[in-house]
Length: 141
Image 1: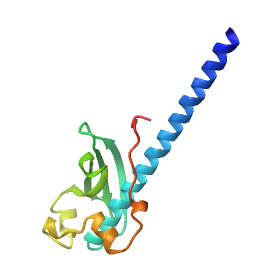
Image 2 (image 1 turned 135 degrees about the horizontal axis):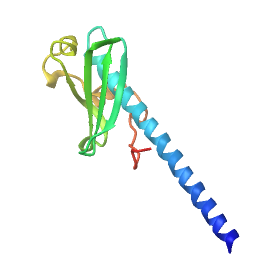
Image 3 (image 1 turned 120 degrees about the horizontal axis):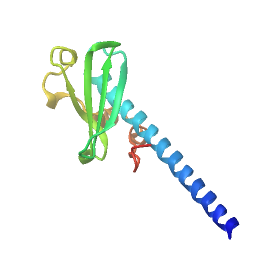
Image 4 (image 1 turned 180 degrees about the vertical axis):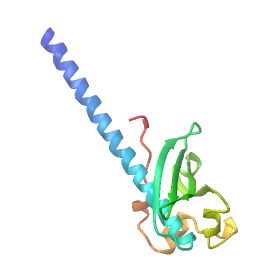
């Protein structure tokens, strides 16, 4: 009887560890993919864009994600990108920024004239699968 309980606990532990690893890998892939989408957006919409650094990637209470960072190694050029569940959890160009900082770098001042990541993917004939990822079911890992 004790052997069966030990085997059962071992099997459940292995299943839990496998689920944790899978969720962690899915989370890392999701973060990396959204970073690629933001980078693509900035490359096509900002003047003098060179690099981007992400400081924080957190889940919002409204089933979306907030991504804080800055561009061109200049912490005064901060932004906050939003990934919404309404957009299939993909970054679509929803970015908050200081109009006197990042705002001055935009090629187009009117938001309607800015290219979205999906527009850029189509225009540049990029593989859509390289720029899309589903979020993990459990974010806390």
